[in-house]
Image (cartoon, rainbow, N blue to C red; front, side):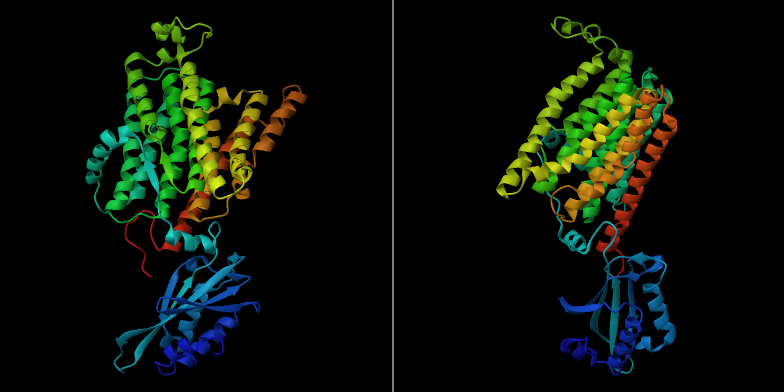
Length: 516
């Protein structure tokens, strides 16, 4: 028992033969781990925690991240020992670095013999795939900070949202509300695909009303989930990651819905771009300032209101109104000089870039610059975090330009969904880095979503050299691109949800906490 400090030995001495039983348990563990094992002693409340660090260890899936409790006196049974050992160690699942924690305490519960029960809590508090040991500790201390300065939200929408939250039962978890709101937008985009597969034909007018209603419901559910979390006392870092992750994907599906409303065709991609750029920059700003700041006029409030009002208005005038020259659709604008003829939706696109995107991005950069200067950091290092998104955008635009089949026009849904999920992966990695307090700077893991872009560009480039014939069919390539980014994002999302719920002892779609 050389590895056990005096305080723990005194606790063990309270139970007859406990030291002998623990020594037997300790020997059994030592025979299953490498010789490089070292032991550290740390204080955790009234527990003494012995952490066993080792370079390699294996865990079976059944015991991955679970907490095990057993009575020390039962360890004299060989069957009980084998059961606990097998639930912790196996050669089926390898891991590069694991930490196994033993929390030893004495209970005041007395047995029939008058002996005190001595229990051992075995917890796999190991380094996970996306979250390190430091990240797990940070998650327990994390608190969300946000400011919404919108007057519309404060005086109109907040009272409405406060009433809406009472319509949801207390057993309904906030993440379920978030997911339901997100699925409204998926349904909206699906309706647009059914009635306008290339986003250049007018759908039935009732579809526009459906788009407006579904977007309004999404905004409501997106606002109510946070109130439900506070109402049920179930706020957590997972809720923030889940909420913002769905919001990042919402940019994709709402762009597709608006593309069908305004008959934007291949230009629908640019409507996704003008929603993705401010969202990414706002997430980047949040990473440095630790506070999500929504100005007096912002996208989640006034921006969404404007869009669902456009959907509803289009239900009355028809989608063709957007496709006509803006001087025809809005006669009082016919006096504007030096502006060439263009569809109304293009004029709206340019107005949004000039009036909303550029000021918002400038505001984000200015706030990050102030924080970096105050901390005497490197602005170049901060700007490096924008690099993966710039590569994603540049790669897709290059691919589209070189494409012989004009993928933006021919496969708008596949291109936007594939790029949107790659964007969601970038945003998710940045949010996770913020939650886990990772160092500032470029995250190389974010570049996984860019893996297929060089091959796609090279494939299109060969068509220019080879008389318009690419090495691989572009339809198959864009299907593979979409499948890859969606699969990558789903793997990332499910893995992170599992790791955070394990680290915090919570569920994703249940309010009750996990039993220790």
